[in-house]
Length: 85
Image 1 (cartoon, rainbow, N blue to C red):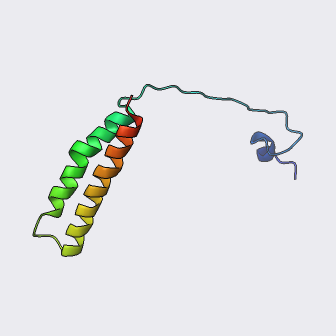
Image 2 (tube, helix red, strand yellow; image 1 turned 135 degrees about the vertical axis):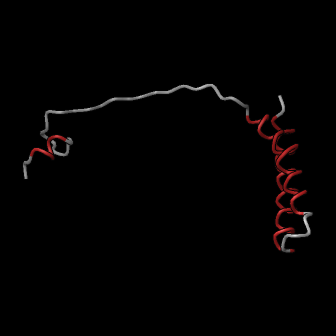
Image 3 (cartoon, rainbow, N blue to C red; image 1 turned 180 degrees about the horizontal axis):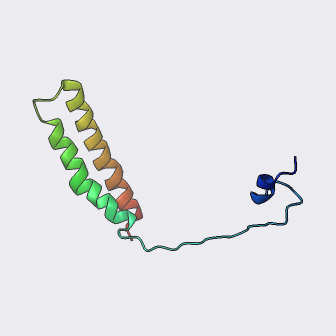
């Protein structure tokens, strides 16, 4: 089973084509983790809580939104205070 496509894709152990290329990429983050946590505390959590107070929504949906908003607020505020530099 020594066909050209096996050699071309380096699937045979005796293939003469060896491709070993390592690509490294560095990036600069736009926001730090603590800045994202602050956005969660001051934007996302209040929005979820506000959306949960809308009477047009089903009671289960409203309850879920409020619980998620409070959980987001507590979780991210706690982690922000722990990792504050």
